[in-house]
Image (cartoon, rainbow, N blue to C red):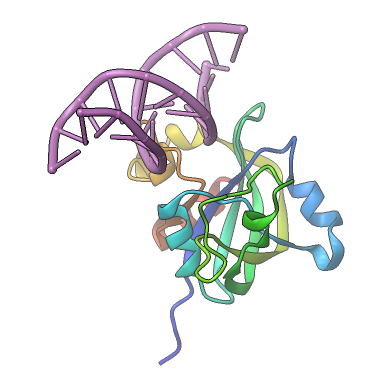
Length: 155
DNA sequence: GCCAACGTTGGC
DNA sequence: GCCAACGTTGGC
């Protein structure tokens, strides 16, 4: 039986990497480096090729889901953890067993209208979303199929 | 720029 | 193993 496609949400600050940057990237694909949170990393490790991703702009005006991408490469070592000059350098990561992974995602779609955080909060059906939980800061998080379908009806 | 919420670190 | 201190996230 084929693996069921799964759904995720990934946050990015548009001032550092926006959905437009993804559109302009070579092959419209980017590696998702810089994740330094174990829970987020573990979610990335469980991603499969073909999984779908809501692209979310955090620290934006307004914060919003702005489009869709798909996973095109499963988890592999994030080399920035060993780069002393990189902002995400992690001196505690042992090269013989690297701590941090990344995945590659590819652009699929940009919404004509972003679906704002405010709008998401107003939807009773989305009450359980990880994104909407108080204090939730996870930059990589799962989205249920029901949430996914419903969000697409809001676009 | 503020600050609440959270994760991590390190002294004990 | 506890927990205070610290750094970060991210909405406002």
